[in-house]
Length: 345
View 1: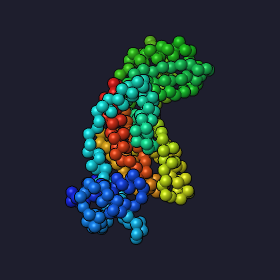
View 2: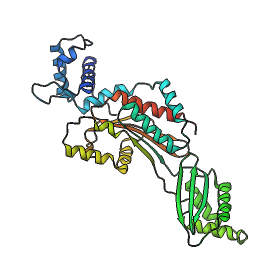
View 3: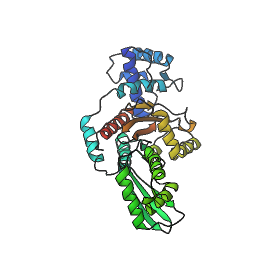
């Protein structure tokens, strides 16, 4: 988040109160509303003057002449800056970590993380695990599924599981597939996926004829894409119904466009890449997303990107209305992220 211009302590306190009141009610906030809070010890006239100055500085705008004031994106940015500086609640982090540790695979953890983000924020919870070329092989399994088709299952040290169906030009018996699997696991477990194929090709080129049929069959599998698994993000999104019930005050056509955009996995992954850039481990808040996609202008994104052991990037985010409960959503993202860092690999 970029730094907002300096405000006096009094002006910033009043602005914070205006933002909180607008988030709570969805109605323009008048000076009398802030005066009733009794925390500023100022008259409505003094508060009105401060709010007028905040409007001149671009923090507030007035929808109608007789209406109160409404926060701008600039006001939300200053509001969440103070919230983002808070430390995570370690008791909550421990509870989340304990629950996530019960998931045995990355897929299970990603799904549970998105569900927890949704429940904690009352927004749209998103979790993604994105593999990189530095993933490390744990083991491979090769299973004959009939004729010339072989199912290859690749398990990496970060507990991601990927499968791929290979179609060969000639059949290979299961006992030979088992021998090839044993060779691969014995020789390449612990290697980075990015380096295995190059090393395997070099070993095949240098091997003597004594290896016979095993190597010949291994070459067949190699040429058909053995261990050539493209990184695929594990992705889960939960809580669209939370947005359905919110009054965005936009036309039905625009609302339909917004939800259509949220249904596209590639677009959401692009948003995560676009906004959750380094530095890793820092909570990012994007107020409105019109610059990325006009249909997403009524929405804000709060997220964090983390580097995990074994060549995995984890991204967690909450998407909600611009008038969302930022305090709740920030805490959800920060606590889930902190909990994930302490999980056993």
